[in-house]
Length: 139
Image (tube, rainbow, N blue to C red):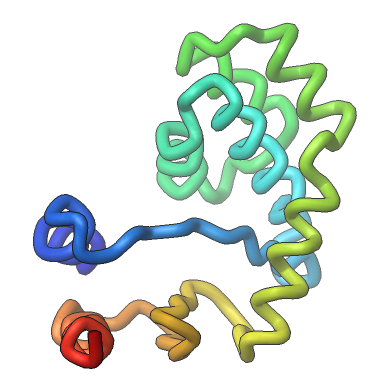
C-alpha cells in the first residue's frame, strides 16, 4: 500500500528513482532464483513489472510451468523467453544483487535502501517519507 504513495509523491515528480534488486532467499523459497530469472527475462520484452505482479499474486504457484504460462498470458515471445530462462542468462546479475544486499545489511524481504539507509520490512509511508525528505533537505 506504500508504493503508490511513494510513486505519486516522489517518483512521478522526479524527486527520486526506484531501482529494483533481486534478493532470492532460496533456503526459504526454493523458487526464488528461478522466479527472479523469469522476471528479468520478461523484462527483456518490457513486461518486468507485469510478471513480477503475477508472481506476487500467485506465490503458491511458482514453477517453471507457471512462468511459461504467465509469459504466454503476457503475450511474450515464447522462444525468446524460454531461451533466456533456460540459459539462466541473468544468473550472475541476480547473484550480484543478492551479494550487494547482504553487504548492505539486508537479511530479508522486503528491504529498501534509501541512499544507503536500510529500511527493513513493509513499513508505512511516513517512514519512507521521513527518510526521503531528510535526504532531499540535505541537498
